[in-house]
Length: 363
Image (cartoon, rainbow, N blue to C red):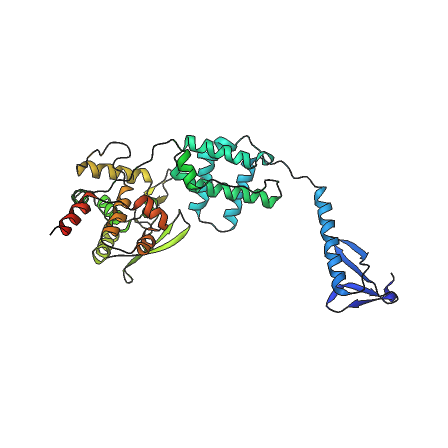
């Protein structure tokens, strides 16, 4: 079809109508080459539908001739990390992907390739994970596995739709002993707060009155505390969100005094790495302070594994919220957890509470 025998169609710059037959033709430059063909249609709508189908079939035929490299999972994991860095994720989030690969994924996926991954392989991985690691960490592991699978699907690997296990199935299949949270009594809390180590005392005070997780407190910067608004803004690595926690008056005073006399330049709790660079305090140092404080307080079974954890202060805080009649939605917002997690894991009844209510009932 020569140029003098075709006219362009308004609003459709790549469509041309033959003046003699009325048939619409398509012509477009793609990747340096002209694609031109007849739609065999005289109406614009039908011609557009024909072109869309034709271009789609051309793209599919082109992609079918290109084979994806059977990349190793280790390489694909590196691509995931690079994408997280490029999207502006925090160094803490990126480090979690590095750590998960070193500690967990490398042990299973190191010798596997992209075309080895399917539903059956994911089920095998879940079974292997539950035999070797505690189920309480499975949520983050599954989250990272989802990211990896999604990245593979975007790259065009035939992974297919993957179904992951839910928590109830994991609990039923896991033979590892469940860690039971301990609730500290009021006397035990008072004994802990009597420690001579002022950093440990401040940490215990924050844990038991706000329910912060250990990593949330260690990453807390001085700028997160607002004396005017009387709250702290806390980043939650577990959920990837911020939460605002209002502080009672006595805790505001505790924060002011601690920042003035004991905190680091950036973080409330600081230490130095091997190169002498100031970083947030390592968890091992916090654990050491906690061990000394509970021994000093004479906590029962203090040295037995999983019997007197620092995380149990969070359980104690959650239980106190419930005993004082705080609405569940408010407690969940302060603690940064879901309703189901609060009810199943953190909501417990203490002996003190039972005695108190018995006295009230039979007064």
